[in-house]
Length: 516
Image (cartoon, rainbow, N blue to C red; front, side):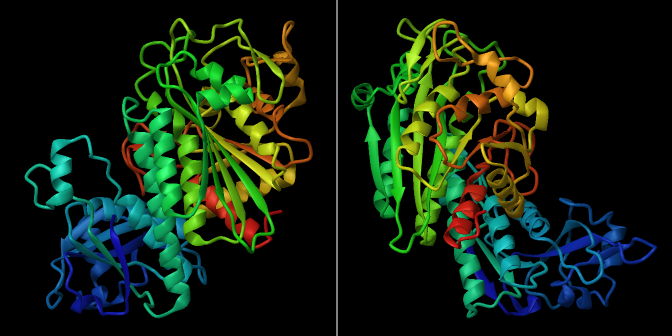
């Protein structure tokens, strides 16, 4: 993990491998020329105030994510300057927003793979900006190479022949090392960034190594380390407790299902939140087998559980004054002689019966059991997170998750929290007329309804398993959970860890008494 430090040192005198500066598209003049962002004044001065002109000659435009390299000016101890685009220059009297800084820092950190030390001279107007840059660095420097021989070598030797280690150290220039707010922002960024990257590791781990049992064991280890109470229900306990949804989904696999409960408590807490995560460690579709071309990335179907796990641990590391319970509904959905079949009826933990019309609509079944278990504790609010439907991807694309809820104010609060931390989200409705499509002749409800609006239908199904008068939100992260394209900003290819920061922010708001 990249080490983070704050420094008031001059850029020219700092021994580093590179200095990162920000540039933007000018908006305050008619010419629209490239502008050098605050923080890089010393570098610009060393170029006699002509740094922007030099960068434009090299083709720089200031566009978001753009990287331009040039030799450092004479007298600098760092040999290289890296100019990263911040997008449009803010309007007069405004500053660069946190997400622009986060993305720029992420791009720079990824560019600096194989580098030992870099100084970041990006605009820092306050501690929050320092936190955003620090978070961007940690997330952008992420790599997952434990299954690559060269990658393993690189972790021990930054000069490995065919592998490069992530950026080892990032110094944030303009930060105040002795200021409590700055130190707090750095500590928060470190806790959230490290736990989010832990979620990414879990999502990227192949399903032959990440089973419900091994996921539960990882959660137990982390819980012990951070003072979190943990309870693991194995197949015997699940059978005794009547968790028909989790058992039904996991019945076709040689790897038995698990329900993991993580409880972080604070002696000063006045609120209790429950986070519920879908943890399908591999989703073949079951008897309703997925077609060829739809199986290869299904190790990511436990992204919701990974996000919940990471968020609970982050809350503990930050010492938030709120009680947070995480529920990880873990199963592997496989076809076999013991697998649940289309037409089977499952009795859920709540006592409600479900006719299974499609075994590939399995996430809502494991979540139904976990949601009811969470509801029994009467928390102040519940949020579930799941890679639940392809329909949500069709509606919102690959970078935005949907937010549904049984309470408009709570949905708005969760949506605002997501946008605040830089996770694109969009509020979605739960139309009552779609509920009728899940009526069953043989059970209380079917696990499928109308095809159109499938993401909303799934949300309506989940609502059936939320306790009365408990505010609840459902995050369908099917789109942004796993990036199959190229990296961008601080987002890598593969597992993204989306929703971790939203959950942490919701917990912070609840601790402060500001959640709705």
